[in-house]
Image (cartoon, rainbow, N blue to C red; front, side):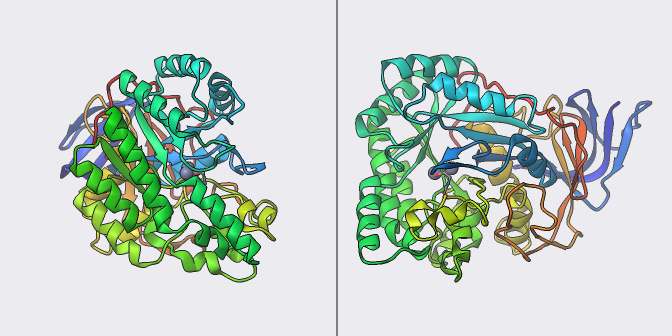
Amino acid sequence: MGLLIKNGDIVTADSRYTADILCEGEIISRIDRDITPPPGTEVIDATGKYVFPGFIDPHTHIYLPFMGTYSKDTYETASRAALVGGTTTIFDMCCPSRSQEPMEGFEAWNEHSAGHSACDYSYHMGVTRFDAASEAQLREIVARGVQSFKIFLAYKGAFGIDDTELYRTLKLAKELGVVVCAHCENETLVTERQKELLAAGVTGTEGHYLSRPPEVEAEGVHHLMTFAGLTGARTYIVHLSCIEALREAAAARLRGVNVAVETLIQYLLLDRTYAEKPGFEGAKYVMSPPLRDASNQAVLWDALRSGLVQTVATDHAPFDFETQKPMGRDDFTKIPNGIPSLEERVNLLYTHGVCTGRLDLQTFVAVASTNAAKQFGLFPRKGAIQPGADADLVVYDPAYRGTLSKATQTHAVDYNAFEGWEILGRPSVVTLRGQIAARDGKFVGTPGRGRFLERPRDAGRPV
Ligand code: URP
Ligand code: ZN
Ligand code: ZN
């Protein structure tokens, strides 16, 4: 059965117009005024609503063995949450430990995702060790359609790589045309400061951000940019949080380094005072890089507007407040890092970006969908509304008023970092490849229907 979305205010990254969209099979087959529905077609009236391309979250951790525990969501729960919130495609970080073979990690991730995810997905392949054996497997994984790597300059001993491995990973990426996503923090500085703080009796949640000040992130970005410049590799800085790091990325871009920048909805809206909440409540807001001084937020919004930052992700890394965050109750270095927000990202960005006038509608679509599709080789199959594209569509109701809460969320973690926050709009219908997957805050799709998106070689382009 086809779908016809009528009279929507269609908004893409570069256009806005009113028309009908006919979806047949899994794709958009026609866009026109006054399309007569073919027999058996379900008609959705989008009058008074926007129609956006399905949103893309370029950075999640659905399955993540990390800091002695596992992130709380499963592909079942997280993909439902994504769809309810308007996100139809996610990029999960496939992060084997240093002692695991990359192929073993890749297969472990496939076991968790295939047949379980309700939304479409791809991975950024974690390079957590680089030697001859891992290189051969990385080449094979790229040949299977994973055209991006993920590296960590932090978390040494777990995921982090040293400078020789960094250089060789970037050279391989350059050779294969693969983009390298990087967590940029100087690990030595983090470790030394953690030791000093603990020795001085600072064990609480504030110790987390004190151990990772902006200079630590800026040094990580500078470091990566030096290596990227010398190798010519395409790079993508994940979860950039502060002006000091942005300056390093912008300076590198100006001198011709191939780099794109992602920030997170958390950095745009939350600040470090959240991590200071009393009674260990601050642990809900511990992530790396840490939440920053609020003065950074205006800079990040400006950078989205001006194109210095190209994407807004979530880094969705959910850990329960009751049972997992307390691993670090007496030692902030042991608090599992992460702030969940996969379900909330689009509505928060719309509410605090579009409704405040900080972002126009096209920029909103670009940073939450289209730029990620382009950067990672999915455009125009994803991130676009045009004949031939996957029929991933979000019919968005700007008249909706509601409140975010743990009580009504879909993802599986036991708190909501935005508890009580008002949202000024939400998806009323979300389609994934021509099927309705979410309606008015509820998942109504097909569990396990999500598809692994093989990305063709050289399809990605810098944004
Ligand atoms: O705190 C974070 N960001 N947790 C997830 C792992 C990572 O560094 O992206
Ligand atoms: Zn990270
Ligand atoms: Zn991450």
